[in-house]
Length: 466
Image 1 (tube, rainbow, N blue to C red):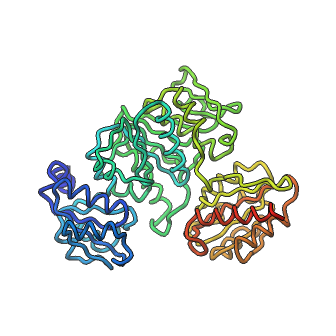
Image 2: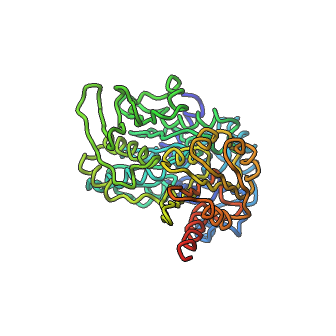
Image 3: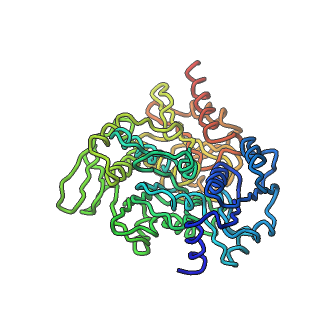
């Protein structure tokens, strides 16, 4: 155990003996502040945002508890006075005060890593570039259908420290975990770790795609032989890294053609699970709306994770039947004149678009574009050439996407999403699909991917009114 790990271990045993700086005053940062204060630590806050734009709840709590806080930037002094630093997921690790603190062997941990030291129920942790929320909520639904008390949160909904603060009563926790959280996960050790996929994303945060992928594999680093890894057998990036996979958990896979590997496989329109090479097989029939990729793949991962954490076969089946796929994820909005309109606004990166196109069985008119996230759109070449008859581009990234893909399909630039939907309706013929799957963030034109998806649905609704 090095000096930094030793300090962190002592801190976990006796938080009240430490001065702790929380960096970032968002939802998870606020929860960490409250949690640490309850544990007796002397806490302070450093936030780069404008004070007046912070939540009134946070500001009132800081004043009531007389917590020292700085806004509008991070001063070196605030970090130098801290024995331990707790960073929020949105705070980059390479800002100078954090780098300097690390050089002084100050322990640096994230809110989730901190919380995991104080939680003693089995954890399912789900990460991946795409599908995290769906799989997290689906596993939770299966466990609930099995009459188990379960906490669902982490990167979605409730931070883990908030759950502990509220004296949450649960038999298991199902957590969505982002790459940002895994950067500072400390000794976080899930009973079941699920890695859905690795495709280029957040390259504005990481120095390379390789570094981003390495961060995802941090999920398994502390696992022991009695723990389990659930891995996507169809993901080339994951399978190429198996030799470098840290942790000691047992591997289970999902996909097609598992060739004797334990896991969940799509066979003859149903999911089949084989636990061992010659072991008993389980079969699950998916609801019709879940048989399309990538939802089908998410179902296989969720079934495996639920069974590995102790959910019964009956609970899995009931959970599948009751579960509602979250909106804006390859959601069928309408079928007009035998043309299907799909809202996949949640597809804010290249990998999500690849998955959506892979599941399309009709010729596609693809609406894409938005604010560029630094990805390589040429990675879409194969799926675009195979599936897309016309590419309609909007937003700031439109020209960059056109240059990468215009040699592989017809491309047209449109002023906005309304114009793109109208043009798609003019171009579409019987049997086509119009797919909004942007590969970009929404912030050049919309408040969020939800706002963008709702705008698309309204535009399609206006076609119905004609």
